[in-house]
Length: 84
Length: 192
Image (cartoon, rainbow over all chains, first blue to last red; front, side, top):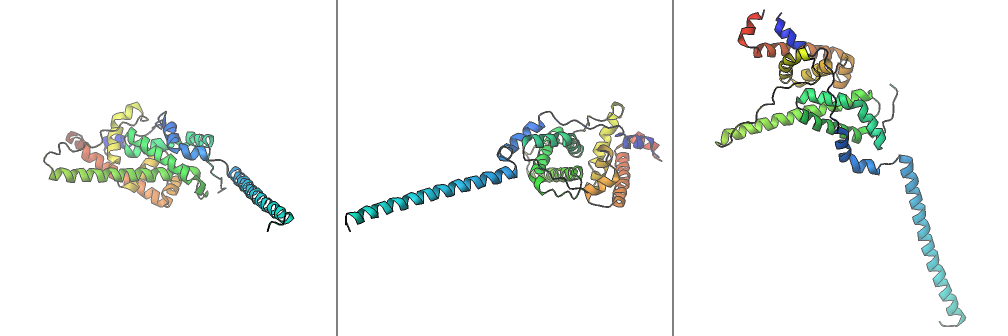
């Protein structure tokens, strides 16, 4: 058996882990930043989406109702004064 | 194995996860790439991949195994890219008279975690590890540098424990041959 070869082969005994560089996380975060900023828990995202949908639906209904009320008022006035 | 959901979608969760695995990932990258710059770059890629894949992690293995697997794959990809670049440069140099010097091979690698009395011998060993086939290299690094048990190496590499044992034996035999061939002539007098 070659002593020198075996000494080389076992030279990693007692090796400790090299510590990660201090700014590694910062660099990773800057690459992931947009994804991490926008991310919210799934439940929050669903509640928010549902709320936005309800608000949008209400706005559409209000606009639609106002248009109907407006045209109904015009027709009523026209009928009163026999303008048609 | 109990499935633990992996939610890394906010900063503090990701930072906590990073803290737990940063040294394992970086150290593995360093052992493969034998360059602090390359190891840092690939370690970044590993954590980005982890973030992007976290929601798809089904708990079919331990988190540690999964992270090591991503790390190993990224390192092997980087080594293949390096080899391709080296071959291209050699090809270019054949056709260009003004190509100047070829890119120098990576310099001797001094792993910062090696014990002081073993530093010079470890340089020779890491140079030899660099010449091993991919599977033997992986088995040896995970065993001797990361200190993983054969069971976990087998899970990372998706092979049986017996296959892992065989790879390690072949890796050591291969390393012995490489080391002997690199020793100065006078040292070879001691070869039996």
